[in-house]
Image 1: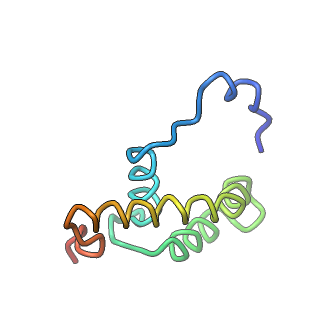
Image 2: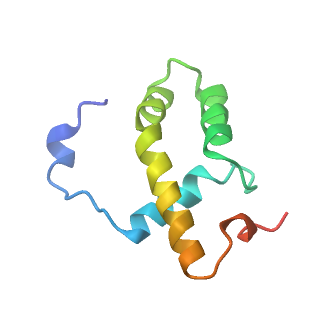
Length: 90
């Protein structure tokens, strides 16, 4: 959205458990460090930047992909005996 496709194309897109986990951490944690849903995080970003800001537009466009990364991470955690809802103390 910022016209950086040529520069970014020089770097391979990482598709890994680590990339998914970083997305999970970023988009299920509020700026204050509390656990939030993806929808809550998207609302927070929209309120902070405004509905027409490039950051909000990019997040809105990426939400389906981000939701899949979060779901994959939740499944990975559960397969390894961890409860994703208990990762953050209240």
